[in-house]
Length: 460
Image (cartoon, rainbow, N blue to C red; front, side):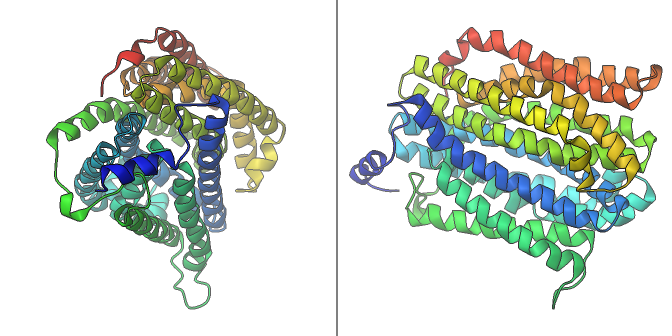
C-alpha cells in the first residue's frame, strides 16, 4: 500500500467527481466508458462477422454458446456492481487504502468462482448444449467453442472485476484503454485462428474462442501489472494481501442480488431461445444476431452512461452528498433517453441492412428485421431501466432492480411469449412483443421506487 501523504496527493491530482458540474463529471466518466463499450460492441460484431463466413450453423452454434456464457457474466456482473459500490464509496470518502483492500477481496472471489464454474462447465459442455435443445449439427460445430470459453473463465472474470474497480475509482479512461487493447488483439487474432491465415492453424469456430481467451488473458496481465506497480488509486501490495471475510461478506451481500438479477435476465434469454428453437435454424440465427449482437449496439453505449451513473452515485454517497448522487442519476437518465431514441429510429429504418451484414439468408433477414422493428419500440424504456438499475447498484442497493426484473421477465415476458407463440397467430412476433412489454414494465416499476430515495440510506 502507499503512504497516507502520497495517497492524498494522488486523490488531489485527479478530478474530484463529488464537486463541480455533474454534466462535466458524467462526460469525464461516460465518454471513455461508452468508448470501451463501443469497442466491445465492435468485438462482438466482428466476431460474429468472421464466424458468419462459416455458415448459418456456425452462427447458431456461437449464438447458443453466447447465451450460455451470459450465465457466467451473471456472476461477474453482481460482483462488478459490488466492487464499484465499495470502491466508489471509499474513494468518495478519500480512503484509498480501503478501496485497494476491497479490490483484493473481489479478486479473491474471482479466483474461487473461476474454479467452481470453469471446470464443471468445461466437463459438461455437451450436456449443457443438449439441455438447451441444440441439434447434433449445432453441438458438433460449437462444442469446442464452448469448452475453450469455459477454460478461459479466470481471464474473463479477472479483467471484468479489475476494470470495475478502476471505474469505481474514477479511472474510466485507463479501464477503456486496457479493454480497447484486448479487443484490438481479439480482432487481429479472429481471422488468423478461424481461417488459418499464414502460419496459424485453421481452427474454425473454435478459433474465435481461442482468440477471445488469449486477448482477455493479455488484458488481465496488463491490469495486474498496473495495480501492482502503484500508478492507479487502487494499489495492491503482494506483501500486504490478506483475506478479510467481513469485506468479502459485504461484497457477497451486494453481489448476490445483483447476480440474481442478471441471472434472471440471462435465463430469460435462454428461455426465449427455447421458445424460438422449434421455428428452425433461420429463427435461431436471426434471434442470435438480434438479441446477442445487435442488441449490444443498443445497450453498450447506454451501459456506458449507466456505469458512469453508478460511479457518481457511489462516490457522492461516500462524500456524504446524497442529493447530488440522485441528481447525477437523473441527468444520466435524460442523456440515455436521447441516445436510445436516436438508436431506435436508426435501427427501425435500417433493420434489413443490419441483419444482412451477418447473414444474407432471406429468411434470416426477414425474421431478424421483424425482431428489430418490434423491439425498437421499447428502447427508451430499456435505457431508463438500465441507468436507474445501475444507479441502485452504485448505492449498494441491488434488491430493487432484482425485484422489478423478476416481475417484468418471469412474471410477464416468458409467460406472455409462450402464450403468444403457441396459442395465437402471432407466433414469433408474439415473442418479440413480449420483449417490448417487459422493457416498458421494468422502467415503469423502477422510476417510482428510485424516487422514494431509500437507496440513499444504504450502508456498505
